[in-house]
Image (cartoon, rainbow, N blue to C red; front, side, top):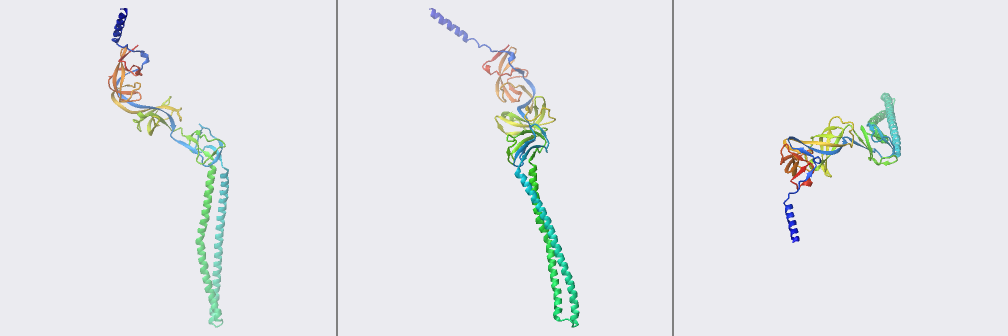
Length: 400
């Protein structure tokens, strides 16, 4: 009988407990983050962390093969375009410079010799022509005398013809020598042109080798700051032509490179207003480039900075950027709850005095700091923004 009574008592207690409502969860009010729903304009923004980077970067490359002799400048030093960063050595090039220098001197001497020889040839030909003309005049005078003597019967016919033949022969020689003189004068410039071409070739080769020798003193090539040396640059190391040696940046022209989450980057467009926070100052800017490809869930967004840069601005400085996407007018919105997503349905806890009751809401467009409310709440409602996933099954919670 006692056993039957105990069973009945347990059944009664169980039935009573089953009719009791679950206890309302209690949450410290100080442990939750709350905000009120507002109606009015809402600025949609996208945020991304990033760094400052130089707009102008120049990689200084080895102009020619050589061995590093001296490193003159250390990273962080301000440089001008003609600042010598390091010195290379190349004994083979030094020998080539001497060889081309002697070749240039030889070509100059050959040109001078050729000019003197041509001038001497022309003078000899002119002298020969003058001599023939003098002999021709003398032969003509003698022929005139012989003609008179022949007419008077004082000279034989044979001597008369010889006299006339000599004049004719000299006239022919004068014509030949005159043609030779003209040809020599015409061919002289062509011969000198060949020598001049050889001289110019020797000069160009010497100047090339000289420039290469001078380039062993590797210069910055632009104003800025020496940001870094390549790892392979050290005294005694052999470097090849075109090998990168150093990175020179212009610190007067910096840009911000932000990493924006891929899902938000689709709203970012060129020209949008941006604010870059360096930690000590806020710099205004505008989007100038969006990387077409995503990497590790983010998209690189480049921002051109306006105005004067703060003193702390330098390459690789960590910054946070805020890109203004658009401004919505007369909408319900609230500070963005934890885990909220645009165009999604969610549950928020709306505060009523010491209690907060669950409310099903529908989100619209979102920003980095706010989200639009389409359904479920009204202006003035205070809601909990903290992570409430632990109480998803609760219809209300109590705040203390």
